[in-house]
Image 1: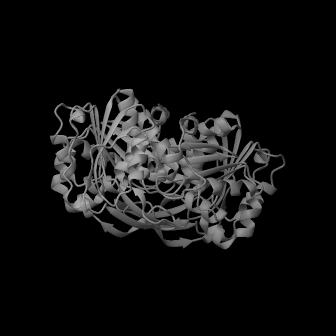
Image 2 (image 1 turned 90 degrees about the horizontal axis):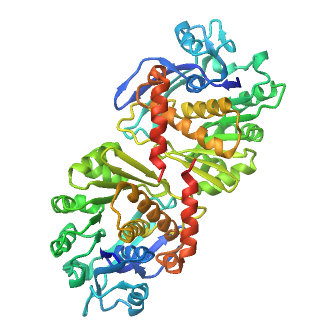
Image 3 (image 1 turned 30 degrees about the vertical axis):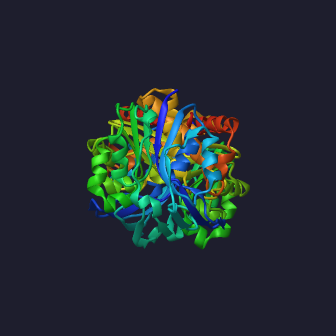
Length: 303
Length: 303
């Protein structure tokens, strides 16, 4: 079984959407990536940090899904990273209401010994120095390194971000971030420029408009499933990344052709994520409904 | 050969984009629909009106493409409809700088005798009463009636618009217009509501994000070709509609399956339209490059 090393926040979120409001609930990029990847037959571990205010039941939710949580450090007397946000009516944009870094401020990721030879690495959205530090600890070159990031790091830590981008095979960012990173409006030109920064594969996430995969001249356009109701977009991008990395690790086949499948698997899982608040829908998911919706994706673009 | 009746403006446009500016050039929905449909093997006619300021060479451009222009009325002493607009930097939105209805204000469309039994009707964006009047003049029920419209008529002539929508098989509108017409944000719900207004098929155009086709529970997601350069989006929606209607008329096959092909043909032609100012690219197009790019579309979503 392939090993998948996931690095990302395990955290508390408080979310407001036009449809309701949550108290502090389970959140974080590492959580969503892990839950999504756990739908594949892989040996996954999450590297992260929480405070001792973090409920054991949340950690149990991960470990019952066979995710190795031994590298989620629990800081005594520390408080867990907390993010709170409010989505606008169209759910396409949001305001951050509160960010409390807490234990994340001094996070020094420690890759477990048995994952230093991991097959696939999924670097969730975190400070680029944290992402680099994970790569530094590996003892053998992974088959694939996937990096997710966001505009915040382009604004605040661009040199460090460019350093880690050089070292990855796949970058997943949204359309606005691809434009910011490349200085190009056309996504075709943006992807070409990002290729020159290092990643052989560029995945541009467009939310309800699907995703694009670029490798040199080759382009794949993956649809998003048109949904009747989107309840809460939180974690959709991470769920997409987790499905992508999980499928690639399971199939152990690193080609443009297979990445197409990986993107559809990621999109498929993300389409469930947005149907309920937080991780709720991901925690209920069974393999039968995943397979059924995957067929729906096939029908959506076949002609 | 199937007959395709096109109703739409034949007009002057003056366009500003971040890449340049034109004087009065050939434009109008009827023009773009006609040029696009002329790439298929159909017997097409345009019903429209111009003033006697309209250059004969523009009319010749249409008739050399075997488009029947006998129902383009030339009003003596009249001035041709003129639209002028400026696109914003992202090319996704524009400001109208000037609209001079001129001869369009009193336009009474006259369907030529030999097109009163047309197979397919493409009602380009015009006052809904003009669109209705065209349907009133037909002596036999067409196999397919396609209607394009815009938010302007939803604001100013909604009852008349709803009347004509009842009578058509396919409506093509953009995502914002689908939301406005239905009062639903979700495009799935919007399409369901628009179905109840009459059209069996709902096509939602999303510009650079592709298009969606709905028939009841069935959904098809057509990609747009990611382009290096978009020069001028004017006419892209009409070119899409013209390719859709032209392909349907040529193939004489009205099924959901075949409409998928029609949408790809429409998207394919629209991808050329935006590469140059106005109709310039559509006037240079040859069948070989159309076929070549159609294959590119196939590759874009196949996995």
